[in-house]
Amino acid sequence: MDNYFLVVTPGLEEIARAEATNFGMIGEITFGGVNFKGGLKELYSLNLNSRVGSSVLARIGQSFFARSDSELGNRALKLPWKRWIKDDSIIKVKASCSKSRLMHSGMVENVILSSIRKNVSIAPKSEYKEGIPVVEVSVRVSEDLATVSINSSGELLHKRGYRTEVTRSPMRETLAAALIYSSGWNKNFPLIDPFCGSGTIPIETALIADSVQPGINRNFAFENFPNYNQAIFEEIRIASIPPGKSLSIRGYDRDAGAIEIAKRNALRAGLRESVHFSHQALSYLEPTGSIGHIVTNPPYGERLKSHNDLRNLYAQLGKILIEKFIGWTITLITNDIVIAGHSGIKFEPLLKTTNGGIDTYFLQAKIG
Picture 1 (cartoon, rainbow, N blue to C red):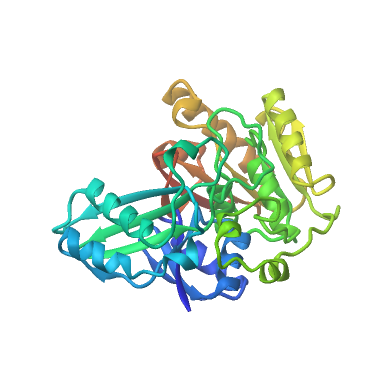
Picture 2 (cartoon, one colour):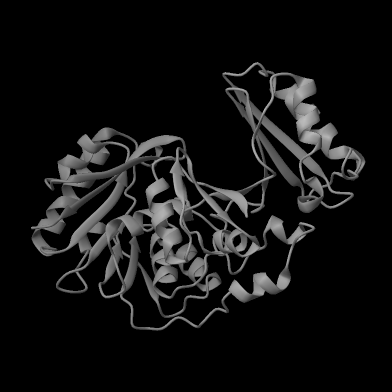
Protein backbone atom coordinates (compact mmCIF):
# COMPACT_ATOMS: atom_id res chain seq x y z
CA MET A 1 0.00 0.00 0.00
CA ASP A 2 1.05 3.57 -0.66
CA ASN A 3 0.67 6.61 1.57
CA TYR A 4 -1.47 9.55 0.45
CA PHE A 5 -1.97 12.98 1.97
CA LEU A 6 -5.17 14.89 1.34
CA VAL A 7 -4.29 18.57 1.66
CA VAL A 8 -7.02 20.74 3.19
CA THR A 9 -7.33 24.29 4.44
CA PRO A 10 -6.37 24.22 8.14
CA GLY A 11 -9.48 23.88 10.27
CA LEU A 12 -11.27 21.57 7.84
CA GLU A 13 -9.35 18.38 8.63
CA GLU A 14 -12.13 16.70 10.62
CA ILE A 15 -14.72 17.47 7.94
CA ALA A 16 -12.44 15.98 5.26
CA ARG A 17 -11.85 12.82 7.27
CA ALA A 18 -15.57 12.38 7.99
CA GLU A 19 -16.38 12.89 4.31
CA ALA A 20 -13.86 10.22 3.27
CA THR A 21 -15.58 7.61 5.42
CA ASN A 22 -18.62 8.03 3.15
CA PHE A 23 -16.62 6.60 0.25
CA GLY A 24 -14.94 3.90 2.30
CA MET A 25 -11.65 5.43 3.43
CA ILE A 26 -10.30 5.76 6.96
CA GLY A 27 -7.83 8.58 7.52
CA GLU A 28 -5.59 9.99 10.22
CA ILE A 29 -5.72 13.72 10.84
CA THR A 30 -2.63 15.90 10.97
CA PHE A 31 -2.36 19.68 10.68
CA GLY A 32 -3.40 20.80 7.21
CA GLY A 33 -4.61 17.45 5.97
CA VAL A 34 -5.48 13.80 6.38
CA ASN A 35 -3.21 10.77 5.86
CA PHE A 36 -4.54 7.71 4.05
CA LYS A 37 -3.18 4.35 2.93
CA GLY A 38 -4.25 2.43 -0.15
CA GLY A 39 -3.68 1.47 -3.74
CA LEU A 40 -4.57 3.12 -7.04
CA LYS A 41 -8.30 2.75 -6.37
CA GLU A 42 -7.99 4.79 -3.18
CA LEU A 43 -5.82 7.41 -4.88
CA TYR A 44 -8.36 7.89 -7.66
CA SER A 45 -11.27 7.87 -5.21
CA LEU A 46 -9.78 10.64 -3.09
CA ASN A 47 -9.35 12.83 -6.14
CA LEU A 48 -12.78 12.08 -7.60
CA ASN A 49 -14.84 12.25 -4.42
CA SER A 50 -13.34 14.77 -2.01
CA ARG A 51 -15.35 17.99 -2.02
CA VAL A 52 -13.30 19.53 0.79
CA GLY A 53 -9.71 18.61 -0.11
CA SER A 54 -7.40 20.93 -2.06
CA SER A 55 -5.12 18.28 -3.57
CA VAL A 56 -3.90 14.72 -3.06
CA LEU A 57 -0.19 14.08 -2.60
CA ALA A 58 1.13 10.58 -3.25
CA ARG A 59 4.18 9.82 -1.12
CA ILE A 60 7.13 8.54 -3.16
CA GLY A 61 8.58 5.77 -1.02
CA GLN A 62 9.03 6.19 2.73
CA SER A 63 10.23 9.26 4.60
CA PHE A 64 13.95 9.15 5.44
CA PHE A 65 16.49 11.06 7.48
CA ALA A 66 18.94 13.29 5.64
CA ARG A 67 21.45 15.53 7.40
CA SER A 68 23.60 16.48 4.41
CA ASP A 69 23.19 17.02 0.69
CA SER A 70 25.08 13.79 -0.07
CA GLU A 71 22.87 11.78 2.28
CA LEU A 72 19.79 13.37 0.74
CA GLY A 73 20.99 12.53 -2.76
CA ASN A 74 21.90 8.94 -1.94
CA ARG A 75 18.57 8.23 -0.27
CA ALA A 76 16.52 10.05 -2.93
CA LEU A 77 18.29 8.11 -5.68
CA LYS A 78 16.72 4.89 -4.34
CA LEU A 79 13.13 6.17 -4.42
CA PRO A 80 10.76 4.47 -6.92
CA TRP A 81 10.66 7.37 -9.37
CA LYS A 82 9.80 5.21 -12.38
CA ARG A 83 6.48 4.21 -10.77
CA TRP A 84 5.33 7.81 -10.75
CA ILE A 85 7.17 9.73 -13.48
CA LYS A 86 7.31 8.98 -17.20
CA ASP A 87 10.38 9.59 -19.33
CA ASP A 88 10.55 13.01 -21.01
CA SER A 89 8.35 14.59 -18.34
CA ILE A 90 8.54 18.23 -17.37
CA ILE A 91 9.46 18.37 -13.69
CA LYS A 92 8.95 21.06 -11.09
CA VAL A 93 10.44 20.49 -7.62
CA LYS A 94 9.44 22.58 -4.62
CA ALA A 95 11.10 22.17 -1.21
CA SER A 96 10.47 23.46 2.29
CA CYS A 97 12.87 23.08 5.22
CA SER A 98 12.43 23.64 8.94
CA LYS A 99 14.37 22.74 12.09
CA SER A 100 16.86 20.73 10.05
CA ARG A 101 20.52 20.69 9.10
CA LEU A 102 19.35 21.05 5.53
CA MET A 103 17.97 24.57 5.50
CA HIS A 104 18.59 25.74 1.93
CA SER A 105 15.46 24.85 -0.04
CA GLY A 106 17.09 25.63 -3.37
CA MET A 107 19.87 23.13 -2.71
CA VAL A 108 17.34 20.47 -1.70
CA GLU A 109 15.38 21.07 -4.91
CA ASN A 110 18.52 20.68 -7.03
CA VAL A 111 19.54 17.45 -5.28
CA ILE A 112 16.08 15.92 -5.74
CA LEU A 113 15.93 16.99 -9.38
CA SER A 114 19.35 15.40 -9.95
CA SER A 115 18.12 12.15 -8.35
CA ILE A 116 15.06 12.13 -10.62
CA ARG A 117 17.24 12.76 -13.68
CA LYS A 118 19.38 9.74 -12.85
CA ASN A 119 16.26 7.53 -12.83
CA VAL A 120 14.18 8.95 -15.68
CA SER A 121 14.86 11.28 -18.57
CA ILE A 122 13.63 14.85 -18.15
CA ALA A 123 12.40 17.17 -20.87
CA PRO A 124 14.73 20.13 -21.52
CA LYS A 125 13.60 23.54 -20.35
CA SER A 126 13.14 24.59 -23.97
CA GLU A 127 10.05 22.35 -24.02
CA TYR A 128 8.42 24.06 -21.03
CA LYS A 129 5.39 25.61 -22.67
CA GLU A 130 2.05 26.81 -21.38
CA GLY A 131 -0.56 24.07 -21.40
CA ILE A 132 1.91 21.16 -21.21
CA PRO A 133 1.38 19.07 -18.03
CA VAL A 134 4.04 19.56 -15.37
CA VAL A 135 4.90 16.87 -12.82
CA GLU A 136 4.95 18.61 -9.45
CA VAL A 137 7.27 17.04 -6.87
CA SER A 138 7.38 18.41 -3.34
CA VAL A 139 9.99 17.80 -0.64
CA ARG A 140 9.43 18.59 3.01
CA VAL A 141 12.41 18.41 5.36
CA SER A 142 11.40 18.77 9.00
CA GLU A 143 13.71 17.89 11.90
CA ASP A 144 16.00 16.16 9.38
CA LEU A 145 13.18 13.90 8.14
CA ALA A 146 12.61 14.19 4.38
CA THR A 147 9.23 13.37 2.84
CA VAL A 148 8.95 13.35 -0.96
CA SER A 149 5.57 13.56 -2.68
CA ILE A 150 4.04 13.96 -6.12
CA ASN A 151 0.89 15.95 -6.82
CA SER A 152 -1.65 13.46 -8.15
CA SER A 153 -4.40 16.05 -8.66
CA GLY A 154 -2.89 18.57 -11.02
CA GLU A 155 -5.00 21.69 -10.68
CA LEU A 156 -6.44 22.27 -7.22
CA LEU A 157 -9.52 20.17 -6.51
CA HIS A 158 -11.80 23.17 -6.03
CA LYS A 159 -11.64 23.59 -9.80
CA ARG A 160 -14.62 21.38 -10.61
CA GLY A 161 -14.97 22.73 -14.14
CA TYR A 162 -18.33 24.49 -13.86
CA ARG A 163 -17.33 27.84 -12.37
CA THR A 164 -15.73 29.65 -15.28
CA GLU A 165 -17.29 32.96 -14.24
CA VAL A 166 -17.11 34.50 -10.76
CA THR A 167 -18.10 37.64 -8.94
CA ARG A 168 -15.91 39.73 -6.68
CA SER A 169 -14.32 37.81 -3.76
CA PRO A 170 -15.65 34.38 -4.77
CA MET A 171 -15.79 31.54 -2.24
CA ARG A 172 -13.87 28.41 -3.18
CA GLU A 173 -15.99 25.37 -3.91
CA THR A 174 -14.11 23.34 -1.28
CA LEU A 175 -14.86 25.88 1.45
CA ALA A 176 -18.50 26.08 0.38
CA ALA A 177 -18.81 22.30 0.64
CA ALA A 178 -17.26 22.36 4.11
CA LEU A 179 -19.76 25.02 5.21
CA ILE A 180 -22.66 22.92 3.87
CA TYR A 181 -21.41 19.81 5.65
CA SER A 182 -20.99 21.80 8.88
CA SER A 183 -24.55 23.12 8.66
CA GLY A 184 -26.06 19.66 9.10
CA TRP A 185 -28.24 20.16 6.02
CA ASN A 186 -29.64 17.16 4.15
CA LYS A 187 -31.90 16.89 1.11
CA ASN A 188 -35.04 16.60 3.25
CA PHE A 189 -34.84 20.31 4.05
CA PRO A 190 -34.92 23.46 1.90
CA LEU A 191 -31.77 25.57 1.71
CA ILE A 192 -31.46 29.28 0.98
CA ASP A 193 -28.39 31.44 0.35
CA PRO A 194 -29.43 35.12 0.45
CA PHE A 195 -25.94 36.33 -0.64
CA CYS A 196 -25.22 33.74 -3.30
CA GLY A 197 -22.91 35.73 -5.60
CA SER A 198 -21.83 33.43 -8.42
CA GLY A 199 -23.87 30.60 -6.90
CA THR A 200 -21.20 28.43 -5.31
CA ILE A 201 -23.08 27.40 -2.14
CA PRO A 202 -26.41 26.50 -3.86
CA ILE A 203 -24.60 24.67 -6.68
CA GLU A 204 -22.40 22.67 -4.30
CA THR A 205 -25.51 21.85 -2.25
CA ALA A 206 -27.32 20.49 -5.31
CA LEU A 207 -24.28 18.45 -6.36
CA ILE A 208 -24.10 16.94 -2.87
CA ALA A 209 -27.82 16.16 -2.93
CA ASP A 210 -27.56 14.46 -6.31
CA SER A 211 -24.38 12.57 -5.31
CA VAL A 212 -22.48 14.00 -8.28
CA GLN A 213 -18.77 13.32 -7.91
CA PRO A 214 -17.03 16.70 -7.63
CA GLY A 215 -14.24 15.56 -9.97
CA ILE A 216 -16.47 13.97 -12.60
CA ASN A 217 -15.89 16.67 -15.23
CA ARG A 218 -12.16 17.33 -14.87
CA ASN A 219 -8.79 15.75 -15.52
CA PHE A 220 -6.14 14.72 -13.00
CA ALA A 221 -2.36 14.56 -13.00
CA PHE A 222 -2.44 10.85 -12.13
CA GLU A 223 -3.81 10.13 -15.62
CA ASN A 224 -0.27 10.83 -16.88
CA PHE A 225 1.50 8.58 -14.35
CA PRO A 226 3.23 5.40 -15.63
CA ASN A 227 1.16 3.33 -13.20
CA TYR A 228 -2.18 4.79 -14.35
CA ASN A 229 -4.88 2.13 -14.65
CA GLN A 230 -7.82 3.33 -16.70
CA ALA A 231 -9.95 0.29 -15.87
CA ILE A 232 -9.74 1.06 -12.14
CA PHE A 233 -10.44 4.73 -12.78
CA GLU A 234 -13.54 3.98 -14.85
CA GLU A 235 -14.74 1.48 -12.25
CA ILE A 236 -15.01 4.16 -9.56
CA ARG A 237 -15.94 7.02 -11.85
CA ILE A 238 -19.71 7.13 -11.61
CA ALA A 239 -21.59 8.31 -14.67
CA SER A 240 -23.56 11.49 -14.07
CA ILE A 241 -27.28 11.04 -13.48
CA PRO A 242 -29.57 13.90 -14.50
CA PRO A 243 -30.52 15.76 -11.28
CA GLY A 244 -34.10 15.61 -10.09
CA LYS A 245 -36.56 18.37 -9.31
CA SER A 246 -37.50 17.41 -5.76
CA LEU A 247 -35.06 19.75 -4.05
CA SER A 248 -35.69 23.26 -2.74
CA ILE A 249 -32.33 24.99 -3.09
CA ARG A 250 -32.42 28.70 -3.76
CA GLY A 251 -29.88 31.46 -4.19
CA TYR A 252 -30.60 35.18 -4.09
CA ASP A 253 -28.47 38.25 -4.65
CA ARG A 254 -29.17 41.96 -5.07
CA ASP A 255 -26.67 42.03 -7.98
CA ALA A 256 -28.49 41.06 -11.17
CA GLY A 257 -25.18 40.39 -12.93
CA ALA A 258 -24.17 37.92 -10.21
CA ILE A 259 -27.43 36.03 -10.62
CA GLU A 260 -26.88 35.68 -14.36
CA ILE A 261 -23.39 34.30 -13.69
CA ALA A 262 -24.82 31.89 -11.10
CA LYS A 263 -27.38 30.59 -13.58
CA ARG A 264 -24.72 29.97 -16.21
CA ASN A 265 -22.47 28.23 -13.67
CA ALA A 266 -25.40 25.98 -12.66
CA LEU A 267 -25.99 25.02 -16.30
CA ARG A 268 -22.31 24.13 -16.72
CA ALA A 269 -22.62 21.96 -13.60
CA GLY A 270 -25.49 20.09 -15.25
CA LEU A 271 -28.10 21.51 -12.88
CA ARG A 272 -31.32 22.55 -14.60
CA GLU A 273 -34.01 21.77 -12.05
CA SER A 274 -32.22 21.25 -8.73
CA VAL A 275 -31.30 24.85 -7.93
CA HIS A 276 -33.06 28.16 -8.52
CA PHE A 277 -31.54 31.65 -8.61
CA SER A 278 -33.38 34.97 -8.37
CA HIS A 279 -32.39 38.62 -8.40
CA GLN A 280 -33.68 39.78 -5.03
CA ALA A 281 -32.75 42.19 -2.25
CA LEU A 282 -32.37 40.88 1.30
CA SER A 283 -35.51 42.72 2.43
CA TYR A 284 -37.68 40.42 0.26
CA LEU A 285 -36.34 37.19 1.76
CA GLU A 286 -39.07 34.65 2.56
CA PRO A 287 -38.95 31.08 3.93
CA THR A 288 -39.68 28.18 1.58
CA GLY A 289 -40.87 25.80 4.28
CA SER A 290 -41.69 25.59 7.98
CA ILE A 291 -38.10 24.60 8.78
CA GLY A 292 -34.93 24.64 6.74
CA HIS A 293 -31.37 25.92 6.46
CA ILE A 294 -29.82 29.22 5.53
CA VAL A 295 -26.20 28.64 4.51
CA THR A 296 -24.40 31.72 3.34
CA ASN A 297 -21.24 33.76 2.90
CA PRO A 298 -22.27 37.35 3.79
CA PRO A 299 -20.10 40.21 2.56
CA TYR A 300 -17.08 41.04 4.69
CA GLY A 301 -13.61 42.53 4.36
CA GLU A 302 -13.17 44.32 1.06
CA ARG A 303 -16.68 43.45 -0.12
CA LEU A 304 -18.15 46.30 1.96
CA LYS A 305 -16.81 49.79 2.48
CA SER A 306 -16.99 50.07 6.27
CA HIS A 307 -17.86 48.39 9.56
CA ASN A 308 -21.04 50.49 9.61
CA ASP A 309 -22.17 48.76 6.41
CA LEU A 310 -21.52 45.38 8.01
CA ARG A 311 -23.36 46.24 11.23
CA ASN A 312 -26.37 47.46 9.28
CA LEU A 313 -26.32 44.38 7.04
CA TYR A 314 -26.28 41.96 9.99
CA ALA A 315 -28.93 43.96 11.82
CA GLN A 316 -31.21 43.76 8.78
CA LEU A 317 -30.51 40.05 8.33
CA GLY A 318 -31.25 39.32 11.99
CA LYS A 319 -34.49 41.28 11.93
CA ILE A 320 -35.77 39.37 8.89
CA LEU A 321 -34.78 35.98 10.26
CA ILE A 322 -36.31 36.56 13.69
CA GLU A 323 -39.55 37.80 12.12
CA LYS A 324 -39.95 35.14 9.42
CA PHE A 325 -37.64 32.16 9.94
CA ILE A 326 -38.43 30.77 13.39
CA GLY A 327 -37.35 27.12 13.50
CA TRP A 328 -34.77 27.50 10.74
CA THR A 329 -31.01 27.08 11.19
CA ILE A 330 -28.48 29.57 9.87
CA THR A 331 -24.84 28.69 9.19
CA LEU A 332 -22.48 31.33 7.87
CA ILE A 333 -18.84 32.22 7.42
CA THR A 334 -17.47 35.54 8.70
CA ASN A 335 -14.19 37.13 9.68
CA ASP A 336 -15.69 38.96 12.68
CA ILE A 337 -17.74 37.22 15.36
CA VAL A 338 -18.50 40.53 17.08
CA ILE A 339 -19.95 42.05 13.92
CA ALA A 340 -22.13 38.96 13.43
CA GLY A 341 -23.57 39.63 16.88
CA HIS A 342 -25.24 42.79 15.55
CA SER A 343 -27.83 40.47 14.02
CA GLY A 344 -29.32 39.94 17.48
CA ILE A 345 -28.90 36.20 16.92
CA LYS A 346 -26.78 34.18 19.33
CA PHE A 347 -24.31 32.30 17.17
CA GLU A 348 -22.18 29.37 18.26
CA PRO A 349 -18.72 29.01 16.68
CA LEU A 350 -18.24 25.74 14.76
CA LEU A 351 -14.64 26.07 13.59
CA LYS A 352 -11.93 28.49 12.53
CA THR A 353 -10.32 28.42 9.09
CA THR A 354 -9.14 30.85 6.39
CA ASN A 355 -10.70 32.26 3.25
CA GLY A 356 -8.51 34.16 0.81
CA GLY A 357 -5.82 34.51 3.47
CA ILE A 358 -8.28 36.00 6.01
CA ASP A 359 -9.00 34.25 9.32
CA THR A 360 -12.66 33.25 9.24
CA TYR A 361 -15.16 31.39 11.37
CA PHE A 362 -18.08 29.08 10.72
CA LEU A 363 -20.96 30.22 12.94
CA GLN A 364 -24.35 28.60 13.49
CA ALA A 365 -27.62 29.38 15.29
CA LYS A 366 -31.12 27.99 15.60
CA ILE A 367 -33.56 30.83 15.02
CA GLY A 368 -36.23 31.26 17.63
